[in-house]
Image (tube, rainbow, N blue to C red):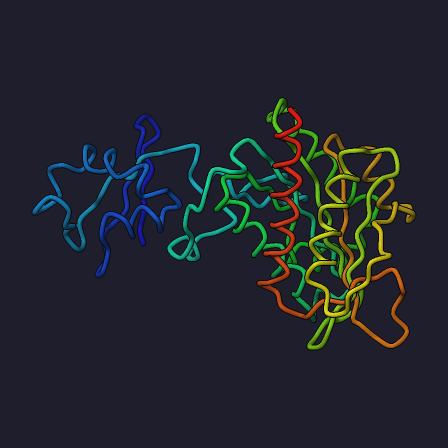
Amino acid sequence: MQCMLFAQENYYTVVAEKGDGIFSMLRKQGLDPVKHYEEFIILNKDDIKDGSLLHIGRNYKIPISEDSYKTKGVQVSTTDQEEKPLFDAELGKMYHKSEALKDAVYYLIAEDSASAQNHFVADITKNLAAELLEQGATVYVMGNTEEQEQEVEVDQTQMEKLGSYIDAINKRYLQHQGKYQRLLVIRANGILQSGNLDVSVYHHDKSEQGQRLAENLQNVFKKNSAVKKSEINSKTFEDKSTLFLAKNTLPAVSMITVNKHTKKSTENAIPVRSDKRAFANWITDGILKDYAELSLEE
């Protein structure tokens, strides 16, 4: 779909394609069609026939809005700090489910030790970002799989990469000051294929907010575990890199690690089925519970 921006206007234009209606066109631009329907009608009143039909091949004005998924769902390059919309072609299949997280901001970091061969965590992160957007949240995904592979080629150290994450996150944290903001790291260790996965959840031992989110995530995974275990608790950060991240970023940090399930799996891990969509939904459930609990307390 072609689009053209008008710098001094409050809209940009797109060309109507076969099958486009007002709802589908707004949805493909990341907008809630119910919320922006009337505005679209006013902007395009001379180019709509029979009250709601569009002309194929004609330009239509799309309102510029801060609540667009193109604005609220962003991928941040950690090499040059540039932002780009996280979703494009997928927008037409996304729906506004609620405003439950409208005042929440999430920063997501996907770490995959086998990124060249395994996109499991990257896919989970993108599915999670979509779920959070549909609940009204603002979502920043830091870096991407391609950047991780390029970083290996230029021999960027782990601390250098974390430093660029920290700079980018803290800058945006200050821009959203006053809102509920959390950083979630999703880390895969090794190649994950079919079969059960082992999940562990971590937090910084000096962060009550990070611990609360970790415990809510932990409880959701335990509820959906392939094998019920009651004596499993979230753990505190121990590795140097995650401690460095937790001590230097402004939002509270929690982490989920994912390993392939084996007979030698740790007793403190939660076995769950290998289902990317379900995995993202479970994380969303934990996040919603965490946010709802905080709202009740306030």
